[in-house]
Length: 311
Image (cartoon, rainbow, N blue to C red; front, top):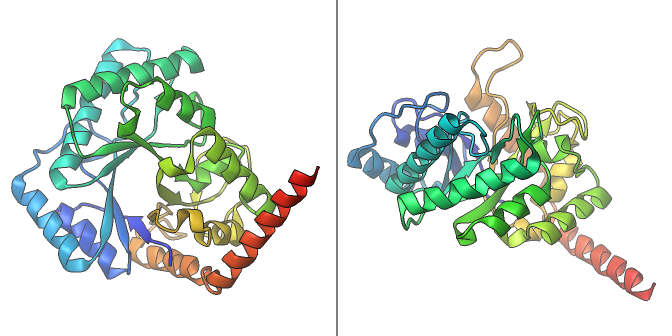
C-alpha cells in the first residue's frame, strides 16, 4: 500500500498535527513549523520537540515533513528581500532539525523583474550561503515543482536540474513532486501513455531517486494553464486514472504522499477532517488490485521497449 497522509494544522502545538493525522488514518503528516504567512517565528523549545516526537512514536505516524513559509523567495533580485529570505529559510531548516523532521519542502522562488537564468543563479547562491550558515544538518531541502504562475521558477524539470547542477552541496537537496503543479505546468499524467512520458522525462532530467515526497492534489485548472488551484482527488482535471497510475507505480512505493487538498466545504466552512478522510478513502480505493495492475503495467513497458529496440 502507498504511504498516504495530509498536511495538518499545528494550532495548539506541533504534537496536535500528529494527533489529527492519526485520527483520520494518515500514515504520514506534513506541517508548517511556524505561521507560514509571517516572517517572525515563536521560539521552538525542547519540550515542543519532545512532545512532537512522542506523538509520532505513540501514533505510529511516520515520515513527518515540513513546508516552509510562502514569503520566502530565494530568487528575489531585491537585496533586502533576498537576504531576509536567506535568513528565514535558514531558520526553517534549523526548526525542522530541532523537531527531528528530515525534509523541508520549499518553492524555489520567483525571478520577478529579472530572468529565468538570473533567478536560478540567485537560488544557487542562496543555497550555498544558507548551507554555510547552518552548518551540517540531518534535515535536507526538497525543491517542489511549481505550477509556473507569474515568474515562478521550478515549473520546468530543467529548472530543478539547474539548481542541483549549480549548488556546492547537491546532496543536501531532493525533490517533492506536486501533481496539481505538474498538470498546470504542462506535464500530463491522466492516462497511461502521458503518465509514463512525464515520469520518464522527470527521470531523465532530475532522476527519480531524488523524489523523496509527493503532494497529491487534483487541479481545478487545465493542462498547461500555469495556474495553481488545488482540487479534491478525482474532481479536477487530472481525474482518478492519473492518481491510480501514480499510487500503483512501484517506483514510488516507498515515497510518502501528502494531501494538500481544500480544507473548506462548498460553503467555505472549515471541514478539514471530513474532507481529508474523503480524499484518503478515494486514494485507497484506487489501490485495489494493485498487484495485478503493476504486473500488467510492467509487461506493457517491456513490450514497448522491445518494440522500440527493434526499430
